[in-house]
Image 1 (tube, rainbow, N blue to C red):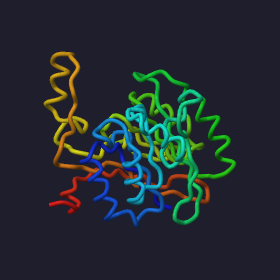
Image 2: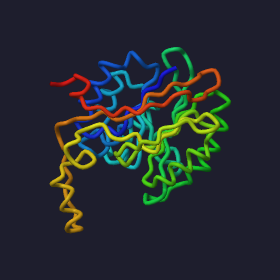
Image 3: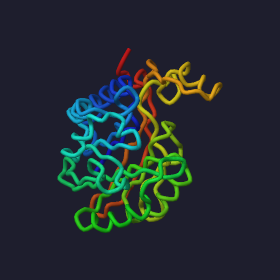
Image 4: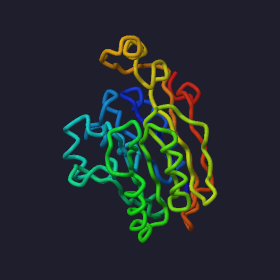
Length: 264
């Protein structure tokens, strides 16, 4: 089976890039996952935007620390397991941390959203929480895909190594910068530290440079604004042996819409 994973969608430029890419390529994949926590003007997601992306062919939307930014999403998170918040938040918060859905071929696919703790808000341990969950999930399906939304590369690599042979695919999100370390680990788990960002490449991680640079110069709060133009699609294309639940190929996607011939 073939799985498409698209990195953090940033604002309208990111949504435009996502739709353009899916219109051309979604039929080449059996299952599609998108990180959508920055899709609403760069901070959070709304139910309307979630429905929009799902209507384009996305199977599951994952989140991270910004999933909570739009309070209106809380009720939506409680009633839909096609959009996920990190599993390792404390009990009682809205939403689902994982889901099991079928791909086009009828294979069951588990998608788990996790959040790191290094340089981020301290929440429950992602390592112990996911290890307990995987033991239960493996009773139902062999294909387990994990979005690890974390800041530190060391923490992401550590989780990949920790879950080698237990998960089918472990990929990082959050930094908006794609890493070049896509690989298949020794026990058959596909891994990459960060799949990158889908949005404008004209600014700084999707935001206008003129709204970001003053923060570094002055250390004062700034209002970040979405950058526009030169949109790029970042993500990974993954092939999986559905019989054993192992990753057999993982390729990076890092293309501008001009390169793809989607927008003139």
